Length: 278
Ligand code: FE2
Image: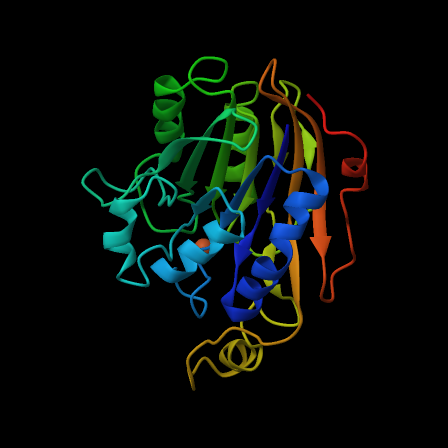
């Protein structure tokens, strides 16, 4: 089975490259399941219901988020009408929406997607490790779930690596989001869980984290805000991760970076031109 995870969509150019390219990628490579972190999709801040629906129409199966989940207030209501939009599972109990969902992939596998947020250099939330443990207890790999994808939205690489090792052998993929820069540490951990510290972003990389570079540079120089942050308008890159899964175990057999378009060096899933794995 083939999974594609795409890192944080930033602004219009990030959305557009996903709308333009994702349907063709799914068809060309026979991708069975797609998770997209879209917490910066609406002008860099949050997700609207229209963008959420357009992403599903383009082929995304589940949308994950993070600290910007409520920047568009409408997310507080539309999150209750769908099981395909996640906010971090370790928000306080009573928070609208859900942090995990079990949905069926195109090839009939039951895929659990869990979204949690780190606590190091981030807002103080509930313990993400306990939150993940709770979700895995309720829906284990090889039990209710054939595949488990965990989006760990966090600042600190150490916290993301710790999450990878914490669930190694109990999840298919742990992938970091939030820092918007793809890391080169994609690997299969000893227990069989695919891991990458950050999937990068789908957005313009001639920027500061996908935002037009002028204002962030100016704030570092003068510490005086002079305008709002706005998404960069340059050519976007897609950035994420391709994972092959052995459905007999739910564990990863291969993990490769995916980068296409814009200023980043290209990394395409050439191995996916061969026949899909079982
Ligand atoms: Fe974030």
